[in-house]
Length: 204
Image (cartoon, rainbow, N blue to C red; front, top):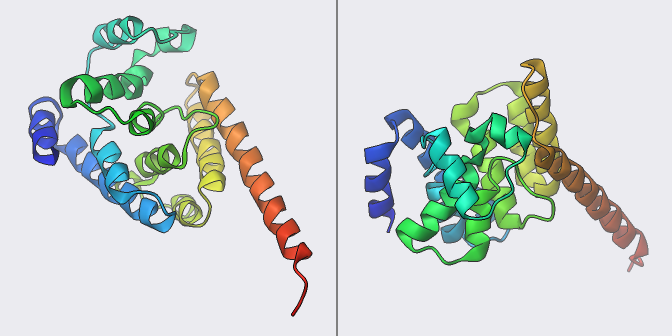
């Protein structure tokens, strides 16, 4: 399967993008191992995540519409944002992927989604933070965060991405804001639960 996917990508995606895809595959596998998630599923989702990256806007809109996806004003203005959802469609139709959680991880890797699974969090973070994205101190902190706490890392990466878009006066899709808010609440709830659990323990 991996060789078939790579052969398909090599015919449709520039070499630089394939290098990105391979780095996402690698980082997704590493994060999966750290967080008790199936490594092979994470790596497969990473390998498949950008299948539709270079589809034309018309094709993205047509495939998303055929799938029954909601096309709001932000997506109409920037159809490229649909490449994640459409990549999941291609993974299913071209490569026979039936694992719904894995397909969701592909679909959610750009905009995220509230309540997304740990597998989706891993692929979302690997796509945003793989080593080829740069080596700034802020990225180093985000990479450490994703090793420590997936929810906190999704929250902080959402902040980072939205600042980037605001600085460049670009549209922000509502799903990215909803994802960031969900991840922040999940991280804080988990921290509170850990603190409560620690306080409830009786010293031996």
